[in-house]
Amino acid sequence: LGVFAAILALLFLIRFPETVLAPAEIVPKEPIIVTSPVKGQIRNIDVQPYQMVKKGQLLFHLDDTEMVNQLNLAQKNLQVVQAEYLRAEQKAFSDPLSKADLEVLRVQAEEKALIVNYSQEELERQKITASQDGMVLFSDRNDWIGRPVAIGEKVMTLADPGRAEIQILMPVD
Image (cartoon, rainbow, N blue to C red):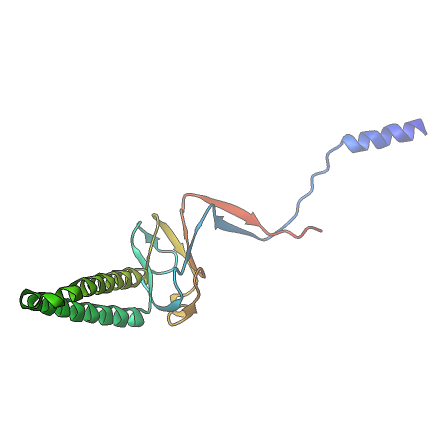
């Protein structure tokens, strides 16, 4: 019985190499997920899959037709209020009672100018650029053109090609 226990203990000390085959994939380490900053529809993807891009390069842009129309309307409204302000300003020289209208029109002009600035900023948000140098990873660009996206929806991944790792997909059993 003692000899059997000693042989069993020796067997535990012997290493038996085990190997396993599993699919593996090379994936980016610490990738940047490029998402849609606003709800919209993708008008164009300006890069190819696996293309190297520079920081600030245009990746894709959303359909901006509605935003362009809002900006044009806001600019027209601003011009109307500015014209009314100029007319009231000229009238105030001869009619002291119309001076009260000047302040109201000045505030309205400031409000319309803020709307124009906001519309311009929103129009710029329709253009999504690379936040750093790297390679863009996404499926076929034709799959994305015309597709509606929600705020924060992933469109592509931006990865540093020098930083990669191997992901092994092995079942637990």
